Amino acid sequence: MKVQTGSIIASRARRRRNSAITDMFQLIILGAGLIWLVLRGAGEMNYVWQWHRVPQYIYKVIDGELIFGPLLDGLMVTLELSVYSIVLGLLIGLITAFLRLSDSYSGKLLATVYLELVRNTPLLIQLFVFYFVLGPIFEIDRFWVAVLCISFFEGSFASEIIRGGILSVRKGQVEASESLGLSRAATYRYIILPQALPIILPPLAGILVNLIKHSAIVSVIAVFDLTTSGLDIISETFMAFEIWITVAAIYLVITISLSIVISRFERYMKRSMLAG
Image 1: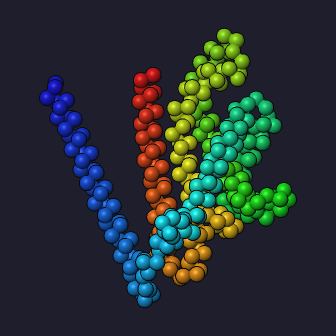
Image 2: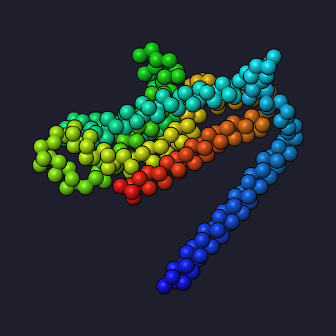
Image 3: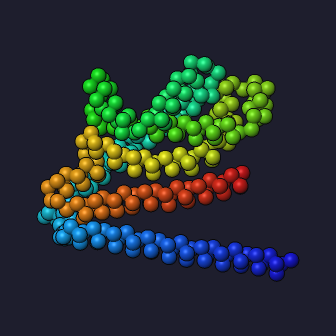
């Protein structure tokens, strides 16, 4: 029996190793193909590469002092916008989830209308509505217009994640808490949320990655984020290939780093659930 178990484990390890090698090989081919396409396109345009000029738009060192360039300034705005949006989006998602789970007909109707409107219309159109309609009416700065729009958009997805996590808790436990005389708030606090959080948190963390990618759309209303910084530099230098590749690389580094952190967080939550 031990020999058979050992052979199964060895076979699984061999399959994982072969799968990793195959994935790496496919990634190399994909990367090589992408590089070839870029070089081919640049060659057809007789494009002159100017990579030596790119670092000055990332940072400068003047008299021993490090000074951020336009791309890093834009990145800071992107990160600031993302932090505000994820906090407000989670709050909107939480309220919407509770409204959909409530016994109030008007609350359910309001939440349903909000979800249907946001999830079935393009984000760009929503941004224009916020900027050209709500912004002038309430005198909201374009930065906060962008924060509100992205928050409402991401909050619609967060609400379904939160609602699904709450519904995953067995109904019998809720009924037992009610039979013990616990209030609705106490039931959520002591019974439902502690069990739902390990299910809710990993996918909610994944929303942050999507939010950072979606934040690039705020460039259409001239919010000085990373994408807008890239557009401004290109309009001045005509270094389209170098700047867009650099901007894409910055987004890629941020999202991959967050994905790694989220993956480790998910493993930690799974171990916590198994230990509990």
